[in-house]
Length: 123
Image 1 (cartoon, rainbow, N blue to C red):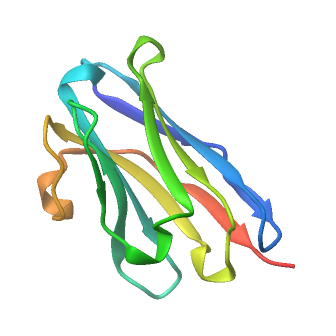
Image 2: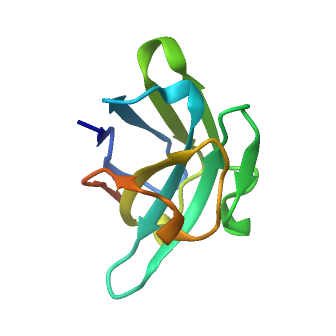
Image 3: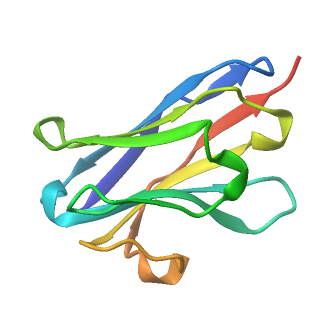
């Protein structure tokens, strides 16, 4: 059974950092692209970052360039989203999602999703 479980969210002050984890099971992570998406209250789900099976990175949101990075550890079946210099506008529920090999900007192209983890940036 394919499963993705996000963790690492929480409350952080502006300028702080968090590292989100996406633990994968039920499929071979090394053949998969993993995307991070977020959804703020009252807004649609937007793409943040994606890492392909060949470790190519795709930034979906210009606002996170220079602040967020994505990495993967296939041995641990986990993908990480490192978030630095956090801003209040980064507040959202963050989701990871999986598709075969290549990244895509379309949420509909991702077949499996985690339950999300809340990130709140506030003083």
